[in-house]
Image (cartoon, rainbow, N blue to C red; front, side, top):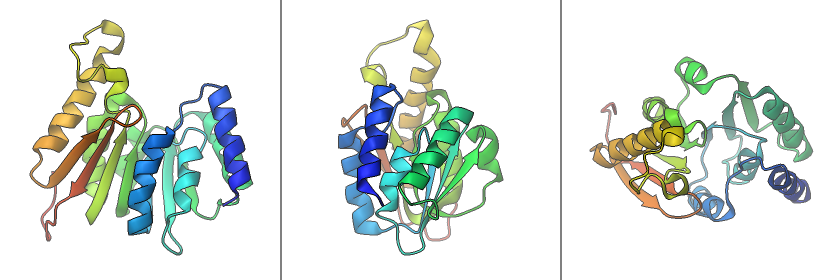
Length: 203
């Protein structure tokens, strides 16, 4: 991976106010990835490709990242950035709405990183659980959403996003097959580890 190009990508994204993974959140995820070297990562929400590029450093040999993005301009920029960082052989971009694309995927993933439409997090979780490996892990970024999720915030503008993020937290906390912690890093990060389930399917 070309680190100099990565810094340029990060700088440009911040200057253009494009939301990318925060440094402290990235640090937590990278610690896990460095210990576990995933073969396959699913990322829901590519933006300009910054996080996917960062994750490639920790893939197992011949590992790949499948990432989904619906904004055409972002996809174009992500493709350019991925090429500049010299990791195009490690990242597959699916262009379109994750709600439509996810049900068509049937790969098994070691890691799922959720960082897309907040109002769709429960749906993303359902699809992630369908495809996650036995000892896999699911990361959900921005889970505390500016502090709204854990407060009594109920303004109309963000009501759906806040309600669905709360539902996501409830589901991952109550699912007996998951072990979940919520970290107050960045804008909040939910980490859900799959408990050893043998051949039992997770719902």
